[in-house]
Structure formats: C-alpha cells, structure tokens
Image (cartoon, rainbow, N blue to C red):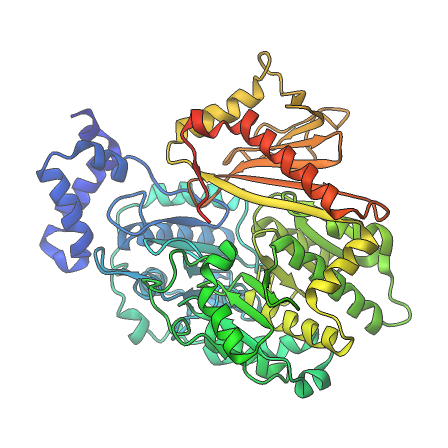
Amino acid sequence: QADLQNPYVIKYRYLLTHFSQSSILWNQKTKEQIESLLQNGKHKELRDRLCCRLTFGTAGLRSAMGAGFCYINDLTVIQSTQGIYKYLERCFSDFKQRGFVVGYDTRGQVTSNCSSKKLAKLTAAVLLAKDVPVYFFSTYVPTPFVPYAVQQLKAVAGVMITASHNRKEDNGYKVYWENGAQITSPHDKEIIKCIEECVEPWNGSWNENLVDTSPLRQDPLKKICDCYMEDLKKICYHRELNVQTNLKFVHTSFHGVGHDYVQLAFKTFGFQPPIPVPEQKDPDPDFSTVKCPNPEEGESVLELSLRLAEKEKARVVVATDPDADRLAVAEQQENGCWKVFTGNELAALFGWWMFSRWKENCSEDADVKNVYMLATTVSSKILRAIALKEGFHFEETLPGFKWIGSRVKNLLDSGKEVLFAFEESIGFMCGTSVLDKDGVSAAVVIAEMATYLESKNLTLAQKLVEIYETYGYHISKTSYFLCYDPPTIKRIFEKLRNFDAPESYPKCCGIYNILHVRDITTGYDSSQPNKKSVLPVSKSSQMITFTFQNGCVATLRTSGTEPKIKYYAEMCALPEQSDRNVLEEELRKLIEALIENFLEPDKNGLVWRSV
C-alpha cells in the first residue's frame, strides 16, 4: 500500500485521470499495461515501473520499451523533451532561430505500440508546438548523422532515438549538444532537473501530426547525406587503387539502418558496392536472424556474413551494428579460417593507418607535436605506444564516446589536429567530421586499408603483427558477466574497496602483486602523489583499475546501458618482448585469478557470457 503513495504513482494516476476525457492523447497499449497492474494489485511491478525515473548514462537514456517512468515510451520521451526544451531555452537566447535535430533508427515493439519513428515524431512535436524549428529526418539514419547534422546546421542540440546494439526490447534517447558531441555533466544533471519540473504533458506535445503540417519542420536528409559523403573524401587517400581492386567485401547491417549508407560510402571511395547479406540488409525490429544484434559478439553472430563471403570469395567482412555507429571486421586467413578482429586490434590498424597517411600527405611545416589520438581508459594502450615512438600526443578519457567527443572538440578549438579516436567496444572515429563513433566511415576506411595492403601483398592480420612487432605487443581480453541484481554488484565493488581492512584495496590478486589502484567511482588513485585520480570522478557507475607488477592493466566496471559487469585486461610489452604465446598465457592466468578472487561468480550468482 505504501508503494501506491509514492509520488511517481500518484503523479501517474493524476495524469491518467486528468487526460481520461482525451484518451486519444494516450498510447493505449502502455495505458492498458498500467491499468491492468493497478486492477490486479501487482504492487511490486507497479513499484518497479513507476517508482524511479530514467537517468542519463553513458549513452543518454536507454531502457526497455513499455509502460512506466523507467521505461522508454511516449510519455517518458515527451517528458524528456519538455525538460530539454526548458533547459535549452535557458541556455540559448537564439534557440528558436537555430533549431533542433531529430533522427531515429528502425526499432519497434508491437506490445507497447512504440517505434523509434513514432518516438522521434513526439520529440519533434514537443518542440514544434513551442515554435522551435526542427530538422526531422524523413527516414531512418545512422546515429552519426545526428551529431554531424547538429554541427552542419548550427543547431543548438539534437536527439537520436536508438538503442544501438541492445536487445530488441530496448530503445533509447541519445542527446547531442551544439558542439556535436554527446552531452556530459553538468548538462545531463540539469536536464534531469528540468524534466522533473514539467512531467505533465503540455498542449501540443502529443500531436505528432505537427511533423507533417508545421512550416517549422525541415527535412535535412539530402543535404546532410550529400555533405557527409563529400566530407568522407577528406579521409580517402587511394581512390585509384579502390577503383581498380579485385578485392571483394561483404557487408551486413544487422537488420538496421546501415545498408544504404555503407553502399553510398563505398561508392564515394570509388569501390564497387559491398555484397550485402540479403537476410540482414533490410530493417527488422525483431532482428530475426541473430540471437543478439551486437557484432561485437564475433563469429557467433556473423555466421550468415562469413558463409556468404566464402560463397562469393570475398576475403573481408564488415559489419555495422543496427544504428551503424560501430564496426566489426573479419578477414579470411590463408588456412581458410576467419579472424574476427577485436576492437583493440582494429584500433591498432586504424591508428597506424591514420598516422601513416597523415605523415605521407602532410605539408612540410606540419608539426607532429600538434597531432593527437585518443582512447577511453579501458581500451588498449597501443596508441600510446605508437605515439611515444612517432612523437604525437595520446590522451585517455573516461569510458563512453561522450568524453572523447567533448575532448576532441576542445582540442580542435585550440588548433590541434586529431586523427583518430576509439573505444574498445568497436567504436571508431576516423577524422573529425563526426565527433562520435561512426561505423559507416570506419567500414570504408578499413576497406581502403585492406585494398592498399593487398597491393603490398599483405593482409590486415599480417599488418597487425607488423604493428605489434614495431611498437610492442598489446594482448588484451575483454568480456563480461551478467548480473541482474544491483545490490550484488554494489557488494562486489564495496568488498574491493574494503578488502583486507576498511578502506583498503587489495595488494595482490592470487600470485600477482598489484602496484597501483585507481577507483574512478570514488576519485582515488594510489599512483598519484595526492592520491586523487587525474580522470574526473564518475559516481554514476562502478569502475576500478588495477596495475600489476608484471605490466598488466585490468579494469572492472559496470555497463552504463546493460546489466553487465565488464572486465578489461591487457598485457603491454616492449618491442623486444615479442613472444606472443608467453604474453597470452600470462594474461590468461591473471584473468582467471581476477575472476576467482575479485568477482567470485559462483558465490555472487553471476552469469557467464554465452559464446
């Protein structure tokens, strides 16, 4: 009974009653879900759905579609947009001149009558009803098109409705600031405050027909697509090779938005079109041919692509995730087996490529000390090794491309040149036309790289070995456990902070001695003289990094978008330490110790990642 006195429940019942005479305003499917729970006394589920609100994580708002304040639905999207309107009105005096960008992917759910396009229309309706010009794409687009459009059109902000590579039940609401990067603090916290101040839908907020009738709505699709493809040419270095190559490529878009745009990108670079996987090239919100629409899962989800590539004698497969902001790559080896590259391995290839092309094409007075590459702190340190040897700068950020995008913009504004940035979860930024990860540009850049290497009788895998032998092997392993119980996750991390005694981190992990501990959640770093982390504190998630005496760096962190505890471990060796097998065995043993001593999956009921 106490749950029914919760302010969220009271507010929802008020809204339900307040709009009962205008039922057309409500999504009947989600309304029926809540009414059924109320009538049947399902208090626990009511509490779960109504007694909390979505908050901005590493990728904006992301949750399951359905009824409730902690779900993605018509009401929560309207409320979020009303909060954003209030905040932008406060921040920008020219808001109603510059406008706002809205894009969407192809997700949808029949049971809640939610689709990305419908939610995007409601987002636009809130703003159009308040006389804000809205650049609303007339069809689905890759996520990178929204931040690109925000910059090109000089809009104050933009929203992309997508859940990227998440399961089919999910959707999301990704917010970009005027700089073309995802929002960071304090904007996210201030927007949440504004949302809380205006949860009751305004007049006009439900009127999605405004997208078709308002003179303030513009369709930016052709302009943005044309400009994007033109900007892609800035990172095309060997068009003549691309035109002539006999190398074939297979592309899968994982039932998402990527097919048309990757085809256009390949044409822009002079390639023949990549061969699409027919069962996966068209949008399908059920992702019916894959267990999980995440190309990062590797061979298990690339089965159709690899089979088609063998049939077509295509040596390279490129896979974009459903919103086309991430890229997986596989290459057939001489023995006929397929190598699916990790995000860290692809970053080594991209880093080498972008720097070597810069070096070959830069002007005589170009200064390598003005050049930068970036990575998130849980990603491979291979770019750091390349930077140390070649003389350019390397920087780390907190996990999440929102931190990379904002830092890149700062560097560009101060006259620096940024060539490449990445996160280990197959997110890559080649060039700076888009200040976010971009699977479309990454796909065509890797195709050009493979074409160039073939002209030198090299494969991507062979070049990767050359890079490691030049700059030092960086052997990494990333995986995760599923945990659906937040108190268990909290208990695991609190134990690490109070390991042998209160406020005492572990000094070893099995037989492996720990040199330093950095806890981003609390701001502690034992390697710093003042014991404070150089990277900003991030209390929204758990994240502890251990640096071991043997050169391994391992991080445990929670996901910002899924019920996962992730681990990242890497052995970083000097160029003269070239015995890969020894390094791999050392890393394997250390990860075993990390899991057994720190995560204790059996004791904590953690579910191992299924392969």
